[in-house]
Length: 197
Image (cartoon, rainbow, N blue to C red; front, top):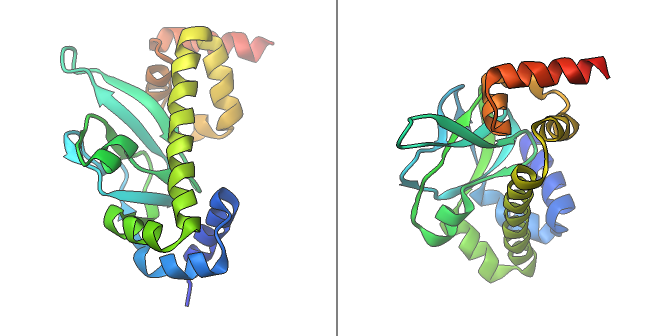
């Protein structure tokens, strides 16, 4: 019998990949609860990612550490009701250069890669899920790259607030500065300018 948490997952899977009731029943045995404490990791740098997670509670940052400077560089923030993985590592079974850290106590439903492969073989609906997940991550990466090339820091900041209206209450300004590719004083200046408009 699906739990309330599974019901939330089902709603997202129906919306995301148009999975049927039969598809959902097929997948139910493979999704398990995983809790991750604040500042713990969904996956570590230089480890192989073996799961896809669906975030029920919490927000994560995906980042890498520059080996020369030891500085963090935030790439993404992933909040509730989104699917979380390191897609290249998952698909190629190679180590991931990124870390995925919980910025709050988090709870997820997770599925192992091997179980996903079983579902792909049994169901066109689940195959569609895999394709759409890959497309979503491609769009994330393309959008992120383009924003760094074509938008000012202020435009990136405003886009972040539009996409994540409560981000300032959940993520430190230091992490936001890193995501925007600027230093703290520049973020303070942008926030003051935006507040005046």
